[in-house]
Image 1 (tube, rainbow, N blue to C red):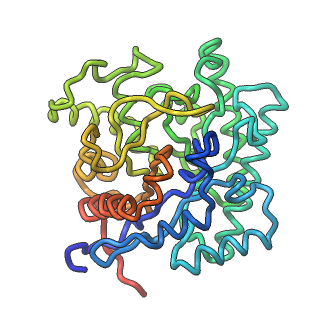
Image 2 (tube, rainbow, N blue to C red):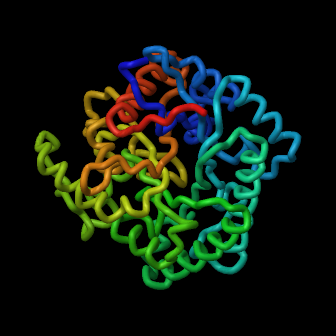
Length: 354
């Protein structure tokens, strides 16, 4: 245990890679929540295991309309594997019952209704003792093409919707985190993301969820060339210039960051359906990966003086859209857990157990 002296931030796996991008072909059906929990609980590196999972509040994993009895069953499934639940994803998109945050009154109402349901579930899971920390994850549910039809108006609409979502979150003592994915209008570039957070202006209720795979593409200006920090043909061997670029990016977004996803990216876009053209998640040791995971995570998890921030009580691995045959291999999750441990070792802290 001494080789891994820190016990914070807690190490979580994401359950939603069992759903996102699944079910479109026979080789990659949806992986049930129970199976994702089994894969997570089975991983072990140097005597250490995952501490918890972050979950998707959508069928077929956890219905956004779950009854208390159904939530108790989920809590029992998680507890029985010695895991906790952390952050939860609100299904705010139209196909899952939500609506665009920049849409008309009916769409905005649908968006906010999903936020309320997610906050209520988040609170209930806390009351059940299975969710010690975490946020409710949201995005604008607005395609970039639709946002660009009228950027000023749409950005204002999204900010107003997010302000209303903050009011809901306050009722349930929850915090919302907007994830920086380039496929969502108003959040598609780092400058737009900062602008949106500042317009909402409720840091106690709305913060930023940084995913290392998605935020890497902020540097290249996909969907927003005017906000690129690095050129499209950047030589990724230039570690010094990459570090300077990450410093500029994180200097702007780190003050807002309240939730963190560890991930790898090969500097290309990938996706399916409404998540098209977003950051490609790679396995941690992918030879095409452009991130030094443990080192580059420090740009987010340490302040300008190099001190560990201790803002995120847990960090989560996000690896969407891996083929099922990869996800069913135990070594996949051991390598992921090892990458998570490397981040905890480098930027974590120790809290004694009372």
